[in-house]
Amino acid sequence: MRKNMKRNFTLLLLYFFLILSLNGFSQTGKSNLLNPFSNRIFSGKGYQPLQDLKWKFKTEGKIFSSPIVQNGIVYIGSEDGNFYAIDEKSGKQKWKFKTNGALHSSASLYNDIVYFGSFDGHYYAVNAKTGKEIWRFTTKGEHWYSEVGMWGMKPSDLLMADLWDFYLSTPVIYLDNKSALAIFGSSDGNLYAVDAKNGTLKWNFQTKAAIHSSPILDKSTLYFGGWDGVFYALDCKTGKEKWKFYTEIKTGFTGIQASAAVSNGIVYFGARDPYFFALDTETGKLIWKYNAENSWILSSAVIKDNTVYVGTSDTYALLALDAKTGKEKYRFKGNGYVYSSPAIAGNTIYFGDFSGNFFSLNLLSKKELQVTPTENRDKYAKTILNNNLLDFTHAAKATDLSIYAENHRVMNEFYRLGPIVSSPFIINNVIFYGSSDGYLYAYNLRKEK
Image 1 (tube, rainbow, N blue to C red):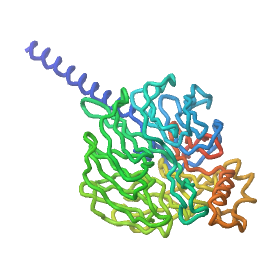
Image 2: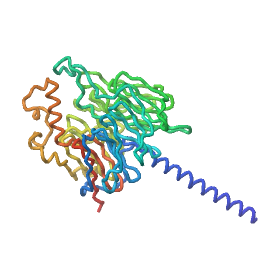
Image 3: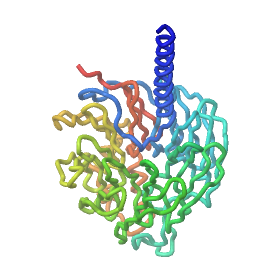
Image 4: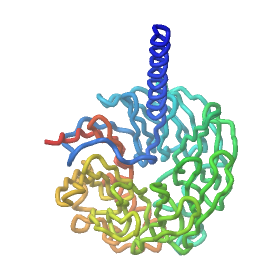
């Protein structure tokens, strides 16, 4: 009997050891893998607007990318060509990594390696603790999406960059039992899958135009769209196409810049055609589509409680759509284009707009609202905005908007406001987001009473 008791006790210890080991592996695996667009729902309770500025960190260029935070360090890239690691508590720089191009790609983290792309034509893997380069992968070139005589603007023979093409693709990490792949889109029209440890190419998938959206992984399938206006589903291991879905192609309303979101067998994404789509993840068949009223959708969606939240351009709206039917439940109107992908914590949804305002909205009451402007917005709003609203024609001051250079000038005026196209990240009751004023902001959130 003692032998049986001893044997049972040993088996019990072994059982608990295995459970603890598996749980530890699972938690470690989850915490080691971080992507800014894979999950936009963060921990929190109740309504928690911004309380006070914890710190702000100045870069020497606009910030279009979105921050991520892990192990006490905030990671973000800037148009000044540097990728920064910043202490989460103090806002002091720990290290920076210099590239030869602007950084409009957000970063992903896996096993203390940070992955991101640069307009210098490379995607990088850098040690997250030291900032030392591990490898770089050379694409066929990274650039803003461009067309000759875009939208009929003058001069008709000029190659014009799309002034609203803010992002480069963010890598996503695919793990299986044998290896890890870093997968990202490129301006050369390829989706690349490289070995996450050494950067060796494993496969590539060619499309007909630049891919600046960030691929989203669900199980063993990748979902992404490109400037060719096509939304793709690929097998992660092989890069083979499972299905594709065509959005409309028309002047000024072509392309997919937003990253997708997947929930309950449905993949959601917005396009410039201008619709928001819900497709069956297995077949690519259309379930529903929402007419965005001639507004592009560059924002990536977040889904909670059978509701899809996503931003729009010209209607300045944060939409709340029924996840099953696509019916609009309500909308909140900002002061400018909403390109920032929202984040949710507790009952609060957070997002920025192109006028330089950052919003904290109570999802339960829809009346409790806090608006936090950038410093530059307070300085320049009266001279640039029209009744506190972004207005391209007003800012143009009667100049000829058929001329590309005049459009470029108006955009530079808007950038003086500190537009927010960066998507917020929340951890330890602090929210982080970037602005085109060059600052990374860290605000303490008000604790629920």
